[in-house]
Length: 198
Figure 1 (spheres, rainbow, N blue to C red):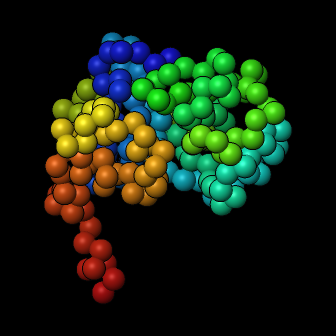
Figure 2: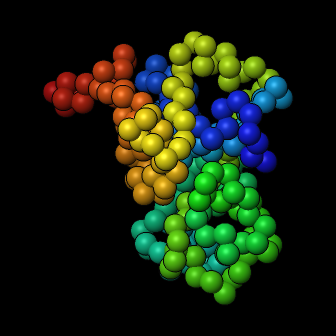
């Protein structure tokens, strides 16, 4: 699970030239990065499934936004669930992956009497992104990804952990790049939205 090496505690932002449809304007929260490979969760790809209905099937109470959607955490093992949250009391076995950000990978020990979303913030994902040994390093070397450190100083080029919950999925890419002082509209290969309308 989460480690302290390499790009752990970073976000990876895909550049527009990255043509893999699984990572179009993706922001990936890196959980592991070492000599054996890398593992992360895509935070920007919402699925059409309403979270309330999925959790009801799992006998988990949902008290949050009834329009909240699941997110696709990546193309690997799409049936594997991950819950990113800021409420460690809800799951005694959760792991803190960032300051104030915990990850639940099993519902076996969760307190099903606590309504999820009533207090705290939760993001539910299916699947993950994975890379083999040296694969991610090669992609970074070819300019496919921009690494954004996670920390408490947005003015110092760090993405505050709470923004992972507070920023909407479709705004996260531009927000993370902005922390690094990068104007997304100036990235080579970004389509001109106005031109596309004509």
